[in-house]
Length: 473
Ligand code: AMP
Ligand code: ZN
Image (tube, rainbow, N blue to C red; front, side, top):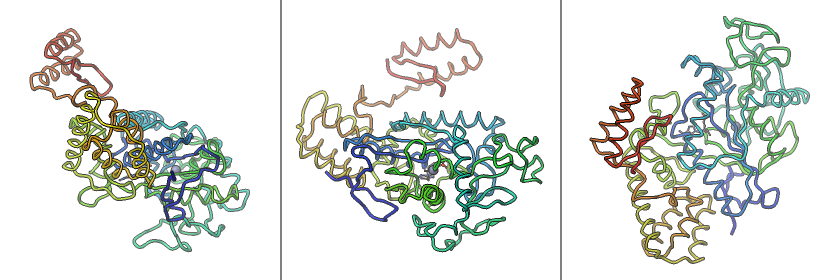
């Protein structure tokens, strides 16, 4: 059966055909690890996870590379503003390296909670500095760069098809867009490498080997202290792990006009091979009810931890996401999420009935219908509806549900009781609160006594990095 995917590059749905038979090279732009991922970011990673699972369902062997941006992503996409990592470090009184490690770990925990498959290869920008320096040098050798007093820039007028992914015409800006030109020659030119500023910020250029920087992350290159521009890491690392041309590159929709456009410009200029990537796929945004984008810098910042604190199963959020096509904007509301949670619980319950009673059939037509849905540009909503109907009509058996769940990733194989969510009685909650206090006061004898009391009431309590975790005994 043909797998058809919407390709931002050609602006249409196309039959997917990999460069190498049965093998797929997939690159997904990863998180900037200066804060927790918000649930909007996580929507993009769930969409990419579905893509990966659908590729696997179609028997492709997927080589999936995801980067971790731990340097160089400025607060402003137009190459000015502060570095997000350094800003995060200042906010939390830690080093930029500590910040990166902490939030990368938290991101991986989010992935586990949401049943997102880990990439085949993780790569950190700071582990690939030499590759990025070599890339910038090669572009300079090709004559498409220029230097300013704050770095090395790509001259976008040196290539004839700059901006084709986003239909950008002749350096025109979109309505309402502003660009801080600084010493840039053209509005769309972008930084490949930036010089570190001096401690008082008055000397943007600092010779290699000099002391007294405002930055923690910096390297000697091109005769100065400096650091990479944000876009260069994805070009350099994807080339290292996936070669000069590969199959699919993904990210959120906001990456189309700047990040991915610039990645294409620099990579195709370097290799001379076009297209660099066959399929570009982009997930639409999760937006708040009032139409606002969810942003790490805004007040409407909801993380997976926020959901967990409200006792909402992260997989209910995954289910909520799967009900809408990845290329449609999705409005977030607590009511809608609660409705999704109830829906997932009902589904869990019905799947358990199937398991216990060993009812339902399995037929290849059903599997074909499911494949048709997911192979139609990842129609998860259609696939879910098909699953629900098949269960309702007693047309599916437990094993087939599990086959479908390999794509949906809703943990339908893991349910042990009626529901994964533990309802904690008030009495037990009070004992847990007392235990929390005892642990904070390092009174471990009391803490153990309280654990025993909780056990007698039918619950096991375990201490995790996120606090006490309770399960039914
Ligand atoms: P960042 O960590 O800021 O680089 O973003 C990580 C990913 O989340 C990128 O692919 C973004 O395009 C994506 N993203 C950012 N905001 C949203 C949102 N509100 N909804 C969906 N995806 C988003
Ligand atoms: Zn990227």
